[in-house]
Length: 353
Image (cartoon, rainbow, N blue to C red; front, side):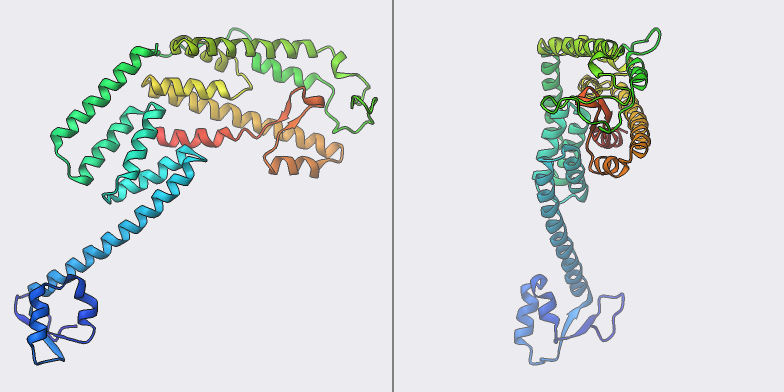
């Protein structure tokens, strides 16, 4: 655009054509007046330092416009995700505060979401980033951090939180393994290959014509289910009295007994997170992911083999691909569960590590 650009502060001649359209928003008033007074309508003469300042100011404004648009877009995305998946919403808001545009929404929401999760360290980190981006007084930051610590102390007074984890050691074969073993001893599910005995009650026969209600292993299955339900009920009783320490102790036993229900694993992880026992929260997350991923794979393999045997492979694949459960006769228990919670655990583990 210049006739002879150089590194000195000499005057440079700039073609008028396109100059005002491109730099009018960052043009000093005296330059505009200079143009109006000039008789030359082809070129304008400026000091190089003045022109360089205009170029830099334009670059800054373009960058600010980009950050504003991106920040607004991410905020809208985060608002939508909060209704579906909190962990994904957090990731989007984290992108925003990393960009560093001084807009409050992502900082506000991250602070609230981390507080709800009991993740005090991340709540503090977001607050520090906020003071950095908005260039707020450091002395006020210290007061804010102290306020958060005091609030946590008050919460801890209301809850009996575990001071340390108490992993449980199973003597003998875990209840969950016994449960899975008994299932393999039952007459195999034949995808309703036989005709119903009674159309009104929709009662079906096994291939060997033994009713599930009469089958010898059924009481053992029911007893294990009953034992797990009792332990889960005990945890709810302790939680209703804010005794999360006692609830965590029972949850540890449920995990060690390899319960086939994922919710206790999830709740134990949340208790440890609230108590600040991050390593134990991570331990339970890894245990949960490994156990239910392996269980899902075993169930899938078993179901597909059975489906192939009885000519129902397309049926089984459709259910598996649609993320649906497949139940044994009359819903006695699950033959296949996609355990979608595994995906949430993996995302949570990524954030935690």
